[in-house]
Length: 511
Image 1 (tube, one colour):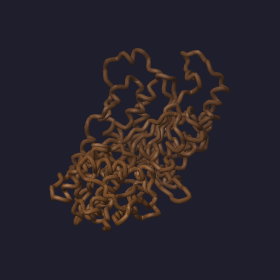
Image 2: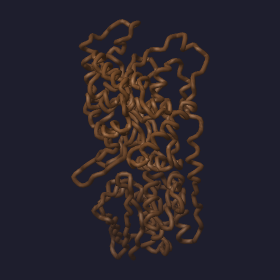
Image 3: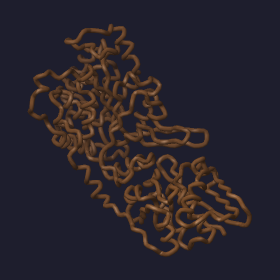
């Protein structure tokens, strides 16, 4: 008897429906075809033990299973439940009338219980689009899949529940998630708050500007100055995610199995990879392509601590994704695109010892050593970082001060107002949402300067030996500072503040 059961394969961040055709005929043998990987080939051992332990069995006949489309590579153990039910239905051990109306996925344990799968959200979206009655999957993934509105999702703990549902009509409990309620959870108090930071008022101001305009930022300072502490608090002042952004972000994290027992991701991601990370782990890829750290930080913050310690080749592969806000992984057989619209926050010591330019510390690195250390970061990468800021150690008087600084909630309100101005400004441009995304043409249009501002900028570029690449960056940051003050025209105070945020362009740093 031939039975068709439906599963799904995740390709990039989208799903493709897989038809599992099971044929039981006279003879002996077990043949599984359709480009399955080793995890799927081993499934017959898990299925046999699981069925044995709940009172069923794999028939001693010739079983042929085809996973169509046969030219698409299938991977992972999530097809166990699909295959097991197909075998039971094809051997007439259970009723198979409605089995083709549902999409079924899950990994089997030997006792028949179900283990979580990856990619439940994109699979649920595809299943709804293709008109399935519902999606049956492990309980741990049910909330994640139930984010899809007007679609029935059933979370189960054991294969026996699914068998009873199809064979005896025993109802399954539908998992329901209030998407709006999940989404509203992000208005809660942040885990890391700017009120915890003592002193560093100028750096807090710099982080507020970066958040308001979506600017990439690099913090330069000696160890213990507070660079990591400030970076970790940046997500707390970013605007709340829109519903569309939350869905996009959840989808990416679902593909790598990081949304277990959760519905919609309501907080912006903060990713902090170690400096030993490989290029494939950072941008994505591998033999079975997976999103990298830059895609997992989509709509959030990617923090690269001790930037010069990263391999130069690893940093160079980030240049294109930072510009295009997406990363394309090309192989001979396929091409996958992952979104990667993130804010880059990098930190670094000014020299190998960490204390160059610190008047109170002994000079242990020569200018030549410092130059070699800084040259690990390429100009084109720095070209994509709008704000460079020096972080100095906090004096004891401020560290011991009991008064709390301005909280993240207050700063966030100002950031949200500035972002609203930018949204209105770029409302006619679909791919543009904030100032950091402006190209040269839009900078000329939205950042006009009066004569005094032009003169100030000209003098600064000559006196401080600022590079040509600093010009556009200064204008973009000036535009954001003006937006924070709710001012239409950029003036000299905005320009002068933006000039301060180009430390690495000055002579004596990289020049």
